[in-house]
Amino acid sequence: MNPGVAGLHYAITGGASGFGFAIAQKLVTEGATVTLLGRRGDALDAAREKIGRDHAHTVVCDISNAVEVRAAFAQLTTLDGLVNNAGVARPGAVEALLEDEVRMQVNTNFLGTVFCCQAAIPLLRQNSSNPRIVNISSASAWHYDEMSHLSIYASTKAAVERFTRDLREEVQAYGIGVTCLRPGAASTSFSEGWDAETLKTGFEAWLKTGPEMDTGMESTHVAAAVAHVLGYPPGVAVDLLEVRPNQPIHKQLSQG
Image (cartoon, rainbow, N blue to C red; front, side, top):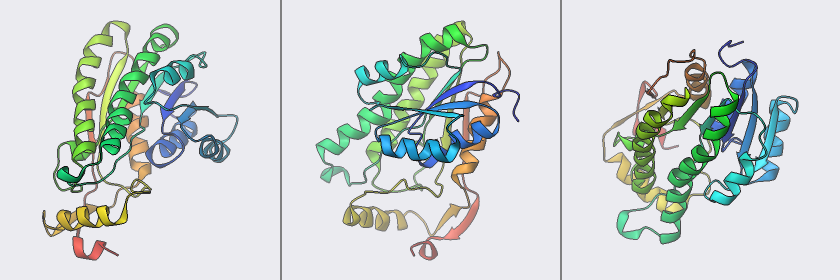
């Protein structure tokens, strides 16, 4: 049990899979309850069953839609923390970027984070003894060796980081701790649904950035980092935490 999160309630966007699901599982094992937000009701229900229905709740919500976000948070009677985890990426060389995919990434990754913070702040301000917001960024916002041809995704995450800096200053007066967590590559279903040819082109460009990559990180490591920063006592917050894999491997060996 983590005394810093036990008995508290956290909302997690993109909670049905990947980092979000791992974060939800970790927080529940530490004694918290969670509400998972996502666009697919079936995926949310499946995640809730795995976590435990007594400890997890679900709300279907497209976080890129401010109206849906406000309606979703209106269903929460208590809230101690928000983890803005939801994100989408679509690879593509700049000159070949598709307008709808650009807008989808900006709307989900950046605007979705903004909308959820707006909806969560009044609840956090009123109902929690240790309110927290954790915004999930990406190492691709700062490092060029994460993956090539993800310019829009990386840019949205850089915007999240700059937004988080101002957010931290604004909500200090309410006792809300704000953290930006910057994870590196980990084993998830992150690239699910990507166009195969576009992914191949990006992968080939990435191979040219250097002969080696770092590996060894799992979604559970990111979840542990989130639980750690949420567990600090009131008045103390981790501003920025970067967690990256640290086992070098030759890129050619990783293609299979």
